[in-house]
Length: 434
Image (cartoon, rainbow, N blue to C red; front, side, top):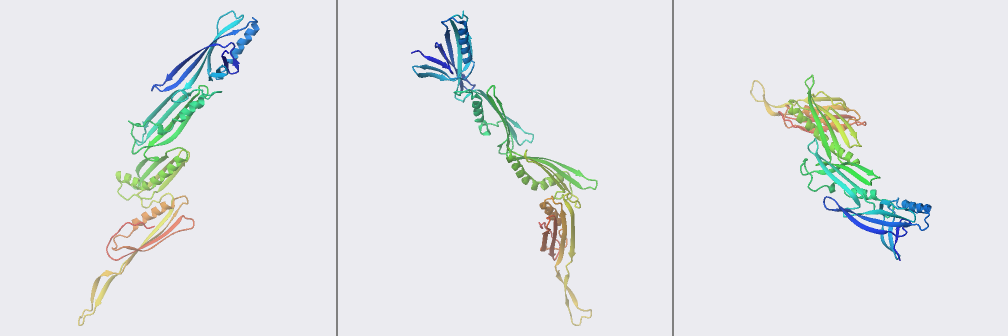
């Protein structure tokens, strides 16, 4: 029984002679990318009737059959399928002849089979590392693209194969282990993905991904500028403008920015004091900001701020509406002893006992803030003012004997009172009063 040759629903009659060849493609690392199996068909269409209309009809049927790629190609012998695949048609040629009772033809079909690295025909991959201007972080860009092979028994899955191959290689865990080798950051660097780009070419069956990472020792990047200025009244302003950029994608970036702000905020007075002293400040810079403005971008995970500190003790922060402080001193009374001496004409002897009753220093006041001004900043401001007015030069052995502190129902008005007792000359220490 003769062999039967089919392509889709078309049967080659009579069966053509078949040639078979294999070509293998390797990448630059000698990995087998794919191999190409080529089938050459050398056949004849026979027309004993010599009817030219029939001849043209049979030729058209062959043309139509081979005009479609990825049909099932099979060779059957005695009911057994010897060869099966879904090739693409590379060429069909009808040889020169009289086309009376026969037409000779040649056709070439080919199949690309995947190799060791996946169902792809070609691919490229690059990693680039660049130091950022902050000199602490590194931007990493990873690009990978692939052209897929069609391995489907019907249809075409080349693009899906390209996609699957590319996605198997994304992520910083696939970065070269020795990188970065020349670029440098600060601290123990960890990757935080910043964004992704993907492209698909449905015609060429190619898929490409570009992803970027930030290598950083922390979960956020904080940059700021500080300025020092002297007003016409001689008071000094220290202004700090900063940006906190959370690392990562989606909600993670915003959460990291919030964590960064929680770390940065308590350090701002110290940063301002450093600038103040470095550029010639000679008084005490307020540790409570005169103004503080915040702007947040949740989508990009960015918080920007500007904060101002002054050394003018009479200046109120912009969020504080009013502040009153009264200081009262009750002087101690020196104690004396009187001794009556018999026959002493000028009267009794008065002895200084070297001690006194307790004196008192009382500081009381009231502060009111705007509703959107943080209460903890108001308390910091009050503490700083109390510390500046705390007793000194009146005596030693100061001790707090009374302390009251209250907030009204609105949460915007604070009233406070502190009383110290003392006996003899001066001693002072800084306390947190509220």
